Length: 260
Image (cartoon, rainbow, N blue to C red; front, side):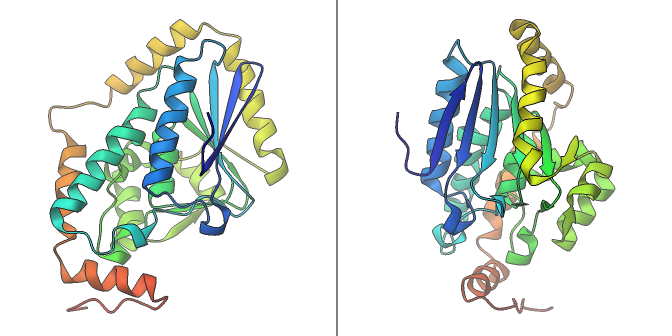
């Protein structure tokens, strides 16, 4: 199967999926999310594939966020649908995959990019990687699981600070936080991911699929935080701050939020 925005290769029992929109710093748009879903679903059903490595093209970005131009004029209802469909098609889908998905974070992983990396089963970063959730600077909140997965990985306090400041952290800081497992050079990033993948491949695929399911179950609770996030994400689209934040971004200027 051919794709417009991603590349898929296979070597032995390890598949590599590359988000290939270098001119947009691999930003996620509807087409990319759909194609990622199709590719990863196909690989999940491929008996010859045991591990998937997910990365971005080039050396600047894993995924530098969502394509803001696609949703800058959305209503509250459209915002909710955007978050709900994205979570279902890609982010929740990746997290619940029966095969391990390793994120090779090769540069910026911001907004939806960090959310995608966090949906993977674990992360390896190049030493030039920068990570953050800048959505509040646009008058939004993370809408693809960021408010749920980030606290699970780094703790509530650090997650609150990262989300509320909209700042970026370095690869080494991300490792200290537990957000990534390893940091290495850009040239060694994929080789290290493949080395880890091959270690995984030596073990029982059936047992690993059960382990993924069991570990994920430990983070479930009676309140569906992802649904809360979808509702709040959609509500942001009805605010003046969202209009100002996205307009400022597209006009390449600093946002001047009402009342700030």
